[in-house]
Amino acid sequence: MNASPSEAPARALVLVVDHHAVFAEAVASRLSQEADLDASAGGRAAHALAMVPRRGVRAVVLEQWLADLDGLELTRQLCALPRPPVVVFLGDTASPAVAAAAFQSGALAWVGKESPIEVLLEALRAVLQGQMFVSPGMLGPLLRLLLVEQGTGSPSRLRMLTPRERDVLGCMVDGLDQASSAKRLFLSPNTVRTHRQKLLAKLGVHSSLEAVAIGRQAGLKPRVPSR
Image 1 (cartoon, rainbow, N blue to C red):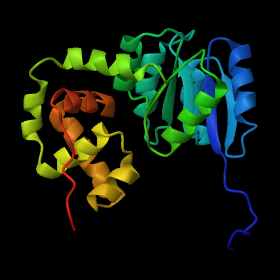
Image 2 (image 1 turned 90 degrees about the horizontal axis):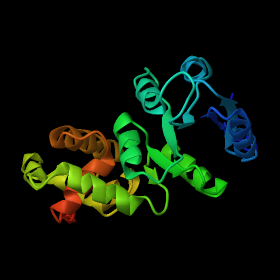
Image 3 (image 1 turned 90 degrees about the vertical axis):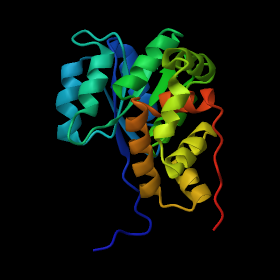
Image 4 (image 1 turned 180 degrees about the vertical axis):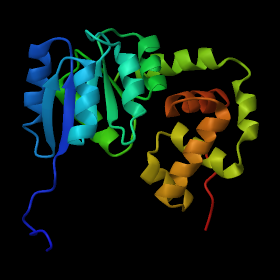
């Protein structure tokens, strides 16, 4: 039977993991006020690893300092699950190194813990659509750090990319998400996703931000094909 036109779409289940129980519960309560989100709170990594596959959690909001496991390691374990959730990493320090480590561990977003709830909501909705997100003010320092870490030889790695992979990377440098990149390059979103995965592997990086840092260092610009 088809769903009624007036039936509300399913809400994305979000788990907030923080060693401060009051903080986690307050954030989860606020997120649950949104029509598209349904959140619960937990304070331990073991709870998250058990709940995610059992409840079909789509997003996990977590911090680094947990009682039973480092947040970076929890991120890696969550992303290794058969049906991994997307991870939003809450940073309690304005450290580009911690943000870079979070993305390298598999997180799709970094949000400062002191940020307004609206920033966390924006990040959650971005990652649930397969996009990446960095809190305002952190993107510049993070990219500068990644540029330094990649070193002067990194632009030469672009030679390993096919012309189409370079096009996709150029779109990433321009800040385009997967759907916008597909529209610009006259490709399907699935094809863009495949090119992204291949170029990350060829560049030897673990996150789109690292790839963008390499592209920016090389002065890469997208070649917009004509139909």
